[in-house]
Amino acid sequence: MTHLLLLSALVILACVLCNKLSSKLGVPTLLAFILLGMFFGSDGVVKIPFDNYGLAQNICSFALIFIMFYGGFGTNWSQAKPVAGKAAILSSFGTAFTAGLVGLFCWAVLSLPTLESFLLGAVIASTDAASVFSILRSKRLNLRDHTASLLEVESGSNDPFSYMLTLILLTLMTGEISAPAVVYQIFAQLVYGGALGVGVALAARAFLRRFRFASEGFDAIFLVAVALLSYVVPTLLEGNGYLSVYITGILLGNSQLENKKALVNFFDGATGLMQMLLFFLLGLLSFPSQLPAIAPTALAVVLFLTFVARPAVVFLLMAPFRSSPRQMALVAWSGMRGAASIVFSILAITSPAVTNLDLYHIVFFIVLFSILVQGTLIPVVAKKLNMTDQEANVLKTFTDYTDEVPVQFLQCTLPPDHPWAGQALRTLSLPPDCLLVLLLRRGQQWVPHGSTVLEPGDTLILSGRAGGAIQGVRLYERTLETGDPWLDRPLSTLSTGTRLIILVRRGGDVLIPKGDTVLLAGDTLVINDSGVLPPEP
Image 1 (cartoon, rainbow, N blue to C red):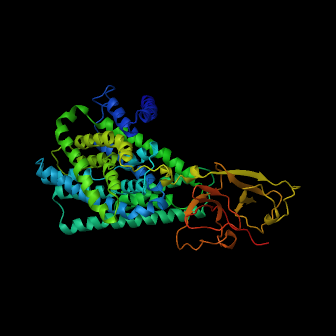
Image 2 (spheres, rainbow, N blue to C red):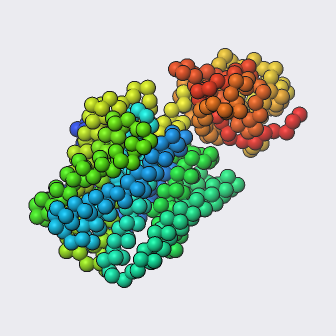
Image 3 (cartoon, helix red, strand yellow):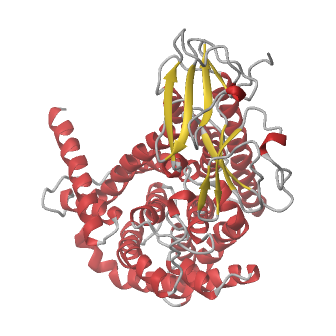
């Protein structure tokens, strides 16, 4: 046991160092994790014997649950909403069309068996969320026309469709299924998976808003259980667990939850560890000595996929949305294959269906090519296509928003003899560009208003310019568009309830709002929603 723990610690440390080194070299981090696994594997230098596909499938499926949950939890829906339609089409029809084209190529050109050809197409049909998220974050790739959000939503949501197609092909290969059974399987996968994902998310959100944990950090533990539950429940009913867990993640990640930033940070770290585990294990499971034998087939498939199938599908499905050729070209190039494809290949190997292909190593070769070539060149291709935007910020497409808010918070408690004690808030002269954001009184959080009378012992939290964060302050963003009921009205006339507008972004300016501030179309508001309204005096 001691030796196993020592090896685990050394592997994690090596992955962390590889992360730093790969960033300097411009090579995707996840490729470094795979190569490290190959270094430790049976054909590598350390020569750890490992060929247990069943154990690998269980571990990788567990890791994939959290990667997909965070794929939804970390996606900012307000940024993704303008391209949600395109992303949904690409993740569903795009995945099916890609699988079909690759299957036809393998059958007609490479002369592979029919069902095995389409099984290979199904396994590699989806793009990889972990790889896409890693490239966008690490390279700070700011893209035009909401392209970053489009890639995030597509890559986060198309794995369930690839998984569904893989299950259908495996069932067909066993010869024990009828056409009505296939239709029901598709229905169960989509409907049960989608409905239960929504149901679990709504139940978890209601629980978090009404229940207070006795110790810090238990909300994160609770969400770990929610992520597992959102996968297990639909899977037991023959639904799509991966679709469910992604929907649960995106609904919870875009809800106004207490301690939101800490939750995002927790799942960011946990998902990073899961990525290390998953990609290292996949490298450990491989036998590099077997790659030359399958290289011609795998290379032909990946070249067709990268330069024919993916571009054809992207241009076919995005053209009706009047997407620019430059955006379509970048989306086509950014269709990286990754961990999900290898995990689905392990699922195929461990299933009762019989296949004569070395499916694992073919898919492993394709993933290596995709991460190394496509992943490395995505920033270059984006620049050549003039799709980078220095005014955009790719980090705002993720839900860890508070890192981006230029507000500093100051906390103070009123002593009994303080001149503000007993005074209404409207009568006080606060420092310039400063606003009272939150009032803590007898263990309760209140959003103050002009008639609020301060009492000795009140804890005041004030905001001003600069960056920072403080416990109890929960921020979210709202951009005013045409038809918004808040447009062209002074703040003092708005009925905002427990919501308090603490900052207004207007063009390149940042405004600290006052009662006479008039809101205009295009204004982006930073809003605090942290407590309850106090009773009127």
